[in-house]
Image (cartoon, rainbow, N blue to C red; front, side, top):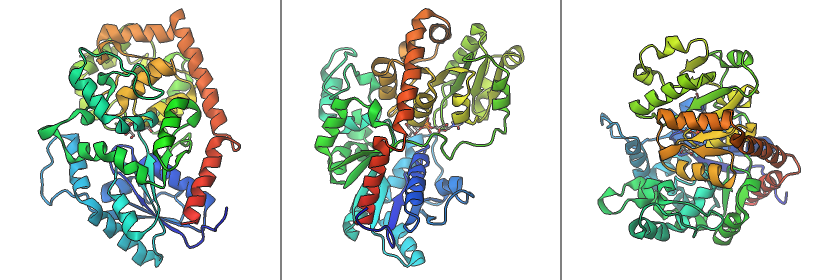
Amino acid sequence: MSNSTENKHVAVFAFPFGTHTVPLLNLVLKLSQAAPNCSFSFIGTEKSNAIHFPKPHIPINIKPYCISDGIPEGHPLANHPIEKLNFFLRTGHENLHKGIQMAEEETKQKVTCVISDAFVSSSLVVAQKLNVPWIAFWPPMSCTLSLYFYIDLIREQFLNSAGNAAFDFLPGLPNMRVEDMPQDLLFFGEKETIFSKTLVSLGKVLPQAKVVVMNFFEELDPPLFVQDMRSKLQSLLYIVPVRFPILSVADSTGCLSWLDMQGSRSVAYVSFGTVVTPPPHEIVAVAEALEESELPFLWSLKENVLGFLPTGFLERTSMSGRIVYWAPQTQVLAHDSVGVFVTHCGSNSVTESLSSGVPMICRPFFGDQGVAARVIQDLWEIGVIIEGRVFTKDGLLKSLKMIMVQEEGKKIRDNALKLKKTVEDAARPAGKSAHDLKTLLEVISSS
Ligand code: U2F
């Protein structure tokens, strides 16, 4: 490394929603281990920081600072997930700057570099004011980055093409459809929100980052996509996600010991991440398909929707299935008895499934999930998109049988194991990711 990271102070801005903070903190953990003399100020909201701090394994060179979530005092939040995001983004760079002030006052060190979740794009202004490099981190599905550079074409496709025809203007990502695109990109006029405007601006904002860091495996992204992004950005680095992220918890619900009693690759694991709750009729369809399939299943389901399950379902399936409100998912997917993952295709879930060689049945809901599902089915061929993109009993049964039982599913099962190996190789100390981590440390140390 050309310069030491000693006396360097990195301000880290989290996008405090969903599981965005988890991969960002994992990246900072990696950096803090490699650069123990460097200070990292992790700036989030009180709510998002409370999930991670204090934790015994967070080193002392990472300190949390809380800024406002932007929600006016006493304001009753409507039951709409985007509302919180809009309030936070509306606070702009002034709110972020307060975090910097707190961090500088306490550490008595000037900030020398800003790393932020790419969605907190106003952190670019903060970095510019401080005259320090801005490093943007990309937690969603890696190849969705491309969409923000081709929004006009995507919108044109949305307005002009008949039906849901496949299009192939995204380099390295053929066979995409409008239905795979994040809805926020298709909002015009009155429907636009601060969040959707922020996303739409990314194609102009991200080229101003000194580095964009992907939370993924370069080896799995299409070379044409990588090449195209490299031609548009100053620098694009890939740092592999950690295998067992900090959200993994002790097995308080006994999932792992239950899995120990099941046959190899026999269990269907079902989970829709931290944000999505499928509508009641889809919960019923999933339950009916699981029951009729007679496969052992483990389902991570939020407590507040248990009431939607069909009458008597829990009793009838008590010998073959298990429902928990939270599963230690990374360990579950890594368990030999899990044969398929029924997922919403959140980027962390996809990475965890890939890392364990588990094929997926995809029911994307919003954001990056549609592209993830398309890539899983058509590019990597390690899963299928559920028929009609909505859970029905017959559709899920068909996919479960195909992947778990039928000869047709063998190719998918084999491919999943092959990609597991690619992922393992990518994480090796001599791999590209280790090289990119060094490059990132160089940027921090020369700031
Ligand atoms: C948003 O994603 P989510 O948080 O809904 O979903 P994931 O990215 O898949 O992350 C869920 C994490 O929670 C863990 C699981 C993942 O690490 O292992 N987990 C668990 O440990 N136990 C459980 O019972 C259930 C989940 C958004 F919706 C997505 O579209 C984005 O891709 C994502 C990242 O930007 O954020």
